[in-house]
Amino acid sequence: MINALENGFNFFIGLGGPAIMFVVLTLLGVIFRAPLSKSIEGGLRMAIALTGMSAVISLLTEAFGPALNNFVASTGIELSITDLGWAPLALITWGSIYTLYFAFICFVLNIILLFMKATETLNVDLFNIWNVSILGLLLNYYAHNIVVTSVFVLFIYSMMLLNADAMKPTLDKVLDYDENNITTTAHPSFLIAPLAMLINRFIDICLPFIDRFDFDAETLNRKIGFWGSKFAIGAYLGVFIGLLGQQSTAAIFELAFTGGVALELFSIVGSWFGPAIEPLSDGVQNAMSKRLRGRRLLIAIDWPIVASRAEVWAVVNLLAPILLIIAMILPGNKVMPLGGILMTILTPALLIVTQGKVIRMTLIGTILIPIYLWSATMVAKFITSASIAMDNFPAGLEQGQTFTSVDSNPLEKMIAIVLGEGVHQFDITKLAIAGLGIVVYVLLFVWYKKQLKVRLNK
Image (cartoon, rainbow, N blue to C red):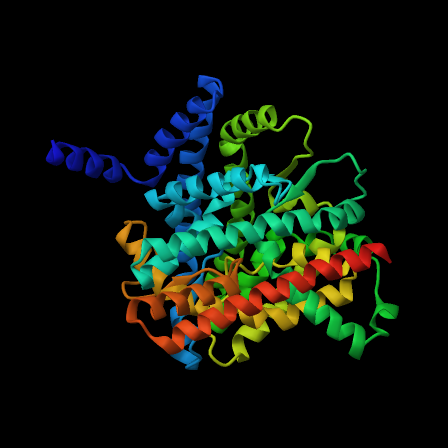
């Protein structure tokens, strides 16, 4: 009996990430009473999205890999880790059965906190549970302790929900929502906001005159036009990498066109994930709404809730070249920004903190970029080994070459690594550092929440 179960499990895992998610999402949709056709559609969309993202990653790495290798060999600059953006993390997490476990315990926590009235937010953005799952997989990789891992995952998820509550009045203001709008976001990328708020406070004290020089983001975007689009930024990146890698003129053109295609496809294929999870999200939302009648219930969705603000995209264009320059000179960084060149993992939080002041957003973003690069450097070993273990190592990268992701939750990833090493080795020093980091993290969050209230009262 045990052998039969083990063989069945191994057969299921052997189907691969896309097939697993097709089956699981379809079944979950049915369990939460979504129509069968919609449940199948959601599972099929997820499988296609995962397959499509793998194809785009392969396209990017096969084109850029030789130029990046030549750049490292010819210059001696140790940017030997290729950044492939958020996509590899989504592939790794959604291809792991642990993600379903983390999604389950986080959903249960969300329900408990709602009934305890500790939060008003119901997070239906189930796809982005991978942002939390990657923290769990990372911590467990080092700690080999699922109990500690589970507690840490639940801690971060609770902070996400509390942050969604805290941001709601500011979201209403910057998006011009009326008081009856129940939309918010619990996206993990907004957890950088407390640190951004601290830097913003220093700007208030040291550079109070800076807002006099602010400008209208919509005007800037109109002036930039196509030249600030994903197509164009990808092309610039291709030319830049081609020149650094001393490629031929024909190869540079090819890199430019491939870069433009890849960055645009990342966005297009990435947009398939949301509809894939919609049947399950709708089922969860309907089930919870029936049980919380008479209570205000904030519905948390993905970060593009703030994408309508021009400041988000103006600062994305300003930070892209800054990110490349900092990557070249930053001590301790080994990452060449590529897939994550568009810092949409950072600019939404900057919008909330500064309420759309472009110069402040750019300055704070510049100060925070090193944290993202250091974090990406630290997690490269785990991401590469996990990708190899799951048999989805990107085509185009040489054996032994590492890759990573300049993505959200950089502070949380750093804490997870130190905590994991401390737990596994029972290293008192690392445990103390991780504990201190968590305490500071919580205190900074409490202060940040108060600052949001004070600013709104003013």
